[in-house]
Image (cartoon, rainbow, N blue to C red; front, side, top):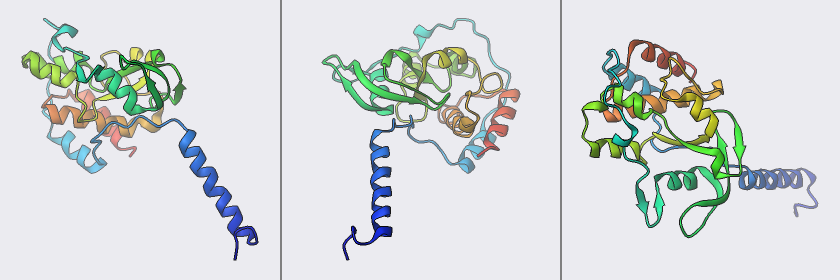
Length: 212
């Protein structure tokens, strides 16, 4: 029996076609790699050392060299823009000339790369206060350009600027629906890199994971 002669089947076909069309045109949501399960994140949070934050003495962003070259003319920022965007077109210098980016922090979609920042989930200054002050510059560079874990994500620039170097006790993404994922990324990054948490930060993270 043909689809045209079967109204129910024809309707299902149209619905599937519509879903596929939406899937192709909707902007991809930024999804960094290696986001752990809730159970894993909870176990990792329990394993983190709880301690008061260190001082900012001696801190400089220059001690965390970024954005380094990843491949050809593409640096870390450009690589994340391509990873997290939809239909991203780049020029000969790997700069994004067009595309669409959905920011999971606030639900906004952007069509200009200049409106998008690459956020360090765990800010560089926060890492410094949590143990990175004792690292070598090479290790800090690896942290600042970490593409293998959930440490880098493309988000709305002014939202990232509002976050600054604050931990989850002081700042959370505007979209509460993203708190669970944000907490899992934050915990896993600190766990992977052996960084500490303070007590207020740990309490906030436990509450956020409770939304998962």
